[in-house]
Length: 114
Image (cartoon, rainbow, N blue to C red; front, side, top):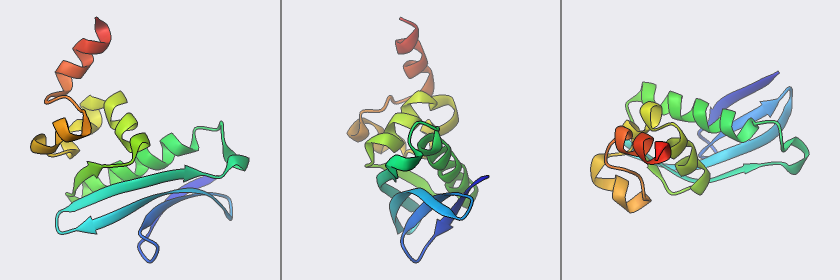
């Protein structure tokens, strides 16, 4: 069974497969914001979709906390870009261009359809 949990002492969300640490996404918090810096999955656990599970659960959690997201981590950015209708609003509108994200979720959906 895999579980995702915040480890604030290490500034990261971790994904565990049973008792084993399978990976993490590192962050830096500031008032009202969380900057995702790096995501890593142990090679022994690769190919199982754990990175996506880790990042989506972390993004869902920071939404519940009301935090804005700064996706410096390319993988976190990729998850947001892949699901703009679900996550783009977490990235402040003024910061989206900086991260090469669309201004609106609908513009990204249209660009994939073309």
